[in-house]
Image (cartoon, rainbow, N blue to C red; front, side, top):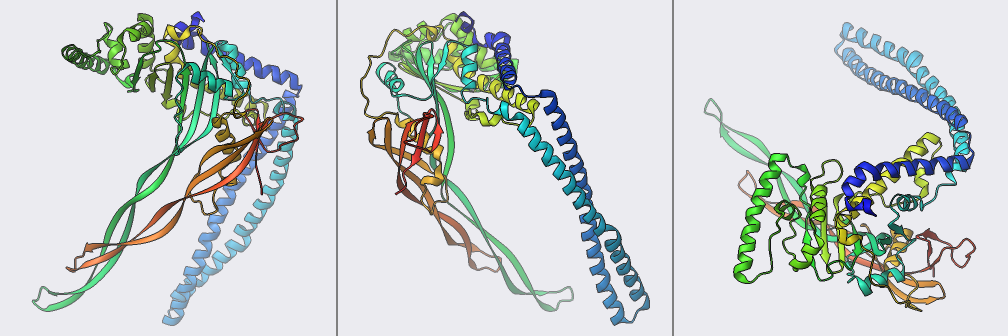
Length: 564
């Protein structure tokens, strides 16, 4: 545990390297267990790639010949038109030249280009057949290894590197109750959001939960329309004579109308008894992007603001007191803290230095995190987590090539570890968060539901929008669940798929034209109207011998929509 007291230093000097070693070792163990012929696979892959390189060259040649074919046909058409014009004009030269060109292009097509295209297609088919044979052979060689990849590998590797991090199969009822009883759990779910995925477990014996949800919000869309008008006007020419001419103008108009939008929001919840009455928040400001001089200016400017805030608090009886370490106070910028004593107990000199190191780090993610502490609940929302691939499905390592599979395996697990580590890093930076919990949960004999409603939504989303959406839906869905009942280990759930359908509309906007008149410019737009549809599904524990349900398997559960 001591290694985590300086998280950035640990990751850069030890953690990253250790995790890579564990990852490479895990892959090599799977490779040895699979007993595949590595040299044979590499030879097959080499033959496959050689055939694909040949096919690429054939495609390039085929493309050039097809372009020549099009140009030749265009040449024949143009020459034919010129020939017709020459015949009409009774011009010998205008007849002979197009005729020669027609014959030339026709011979080029018939004797060179078309045969080349046919030969290239046959040659491509021949090499594609060989390539397919080599690919299927390579895939067959890799089958024993592909079958050994495990969905839980990313978690096992992190646990090996950092034993203080322990992962669970899913967000359980016991885990949820621990959050609610001892850590001021806040449910950030709303009717406009749906939980897509969760990763849960314990860090230093305290519960954590990664959440990824789809969030719906209403924004606006600008629609554009145009109308071309014309009018006749009189004018005096250079000789003084009156003439008329037709003028045209394209009028443009735009309108703004509501439109539904959707985004993903990923965040980490962590429960801890440290500073249990303290609440504050801070936003990431990417101080890591600043030059040394710009950072100094930022700190000096921030010091003045902190001084004024402290003076005002003293005058008005406020609680704010500036920290001695003004660099930390400015960069962390948690000036809305409501308990100075607990804030100082929490942010010791070591915690301050660790946090400044994270914020100013220019090698990894730097100052990309939002940190909210709400009594015993801590919320970390980072920019890198929004791009984090949470899908730990073993299928993403599958490959026809042992070297490609190894690269996928190592790259994914290294990136997975890095994202998880740096979401925890602001917490690891604080020694108080590295203490064992002082509270335990009394065992509860029976829960109302077998599984949390977070997992209900995760399983509904695992089945997918298409299974639940209204037939007129044109947008993504927000899947909300409600509990109907349980039978043994099976939860029966109602799923409400909330979405929108669209209706084409046209609005006419008055625009003043160059003819001195107002014109109604049509602007097509879409009106989005909310719709919903209710369905039912069942969720059960996934067991190899369990035949009560068959459906989508995820998080150690199996879910299936109930068809009536």
